Each structure stands twice: as structure tokens, then as C-alpha cells.
Image (cartoon, rainbow, N blue to C red; front, side, top):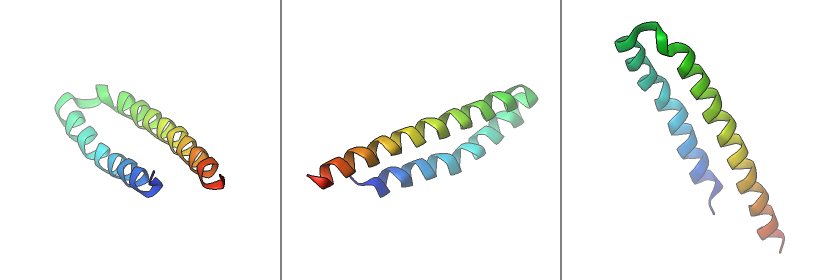
Length: 64
């Protein structure tokens, strides 16, 4: 498992998501601002848990 690969994917998602959110807000005005903020926080939380799990299993496999 390559940890850098997953972190690059998550970085790309976090960089490209505000652009998509901006287009949605421009179409549907101010209803989606709170939803997009919640969605970004949920993605960040889940990605941090996922990276910690990958790092934990990588350390276990590396120490064998």
C-alpha cells in the first residue's frame, strides 16, 4: 500500500471540491453553502480516519 498515493487522491478531492461547490452555489444561490461546508468537513474527517487506518496497518505490516 502506498500512503502517498491515497494522500494525493485526497488532496486532489479537497482542492477540486470547492470549485464544484462554487458552481453549485452560483446555480442554486445560498441554500447549498451550509450543505457544502458540512460535506467538506465530513470528507475531511473520513479521510483522516482512513489515512490513520492505512498508516496503522502499514506500520503493523512493516514491523513484521
